[in-house]
Each structure stands twice: as structure tokens, then as C-alpha cells.
Amino acid sequence: MNIENAKQLAKQGNREGAITMLRQMLEQNEGERELVLLELGVVYNTMGETTQAINHLNEVIRINPENTKAKAYLDMINGILDYYCKDLLNP
Image (cartoon, rainbow, N blue to C red; front, top):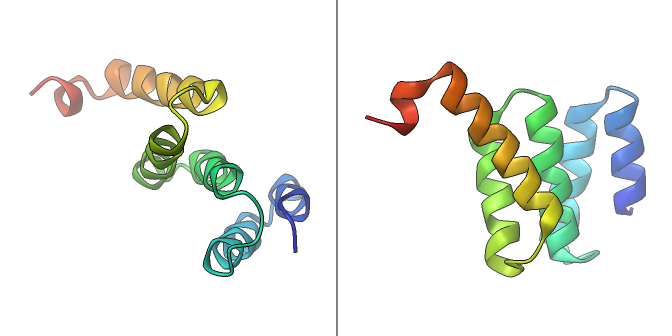
């Protein structure tokens, strides 16, 4: 079980399988936690699970504040939310 297999599953459309694999990796401490959380955030984002994506990407930022990929995804998600759901971010 590795992150590349999970990425391949997600790419093939089996996002639930990818999430299951990534969660197992977290539970078993397999792979680098930062990369596994990042991939979980990416997969959740592609599924439209915005809250889960933000939570996982924020965890990546807590681990490594310099992670540019996580920052880019968060900026993209926040930009979309700001455009479509102004009341969520600006009550």
C-alpha cells in the first residue's frame, strides 16, 4: 500500500477506494503523514467534499507551513467559496 496506488485509484475514478487506502495508511503510519493528508485533501476536493478537503489541507499546513501545494489548493477552494458563497466567509 502506497500513495501512488491511491493516486492511481483516484485517477481511475475509484475515489472511495483511494480514501480508504489513504486512511489506512494514516492509521498504520505508512508513508509520510504530510503527503497522505495532502492527497486526502486533493481527493476530497475532487469529490466536492469541501469541508473534508479544507480540514485535511489545513492539517498539512500545520505540519509544514511552507507546503505550496496545500496553500494553492486552499487558496483555490477559498476563492471558489468566496465567489459562490460570500455569506459563508463574510457573515
